[in-house]
Length: 70
Image (cartoon, rainbow, N blue to C red; front, side, top):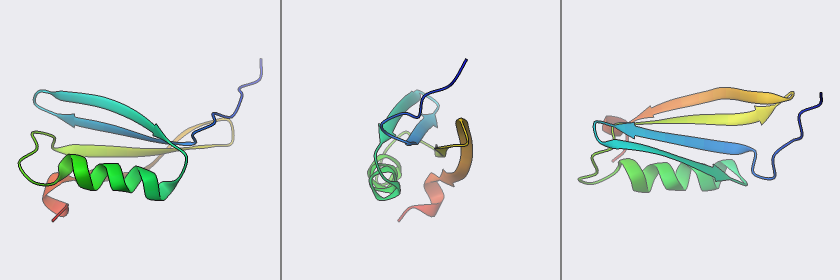
């Protein structure tokens, strides 16, 4: 069975006490734009996990904490 590359090879998973959201993106820039918006201000989100599709699977790219976003 072969795994097909997704059309949006960047994925962001945002979490917090009452938050669990997942979003796919076409570029790294688009993924990080969402993170800045989702973790900034008075958002209840606490963390965003960034994953990238490579070599036939999702790889953990980075975890960003809300305290790191101005």
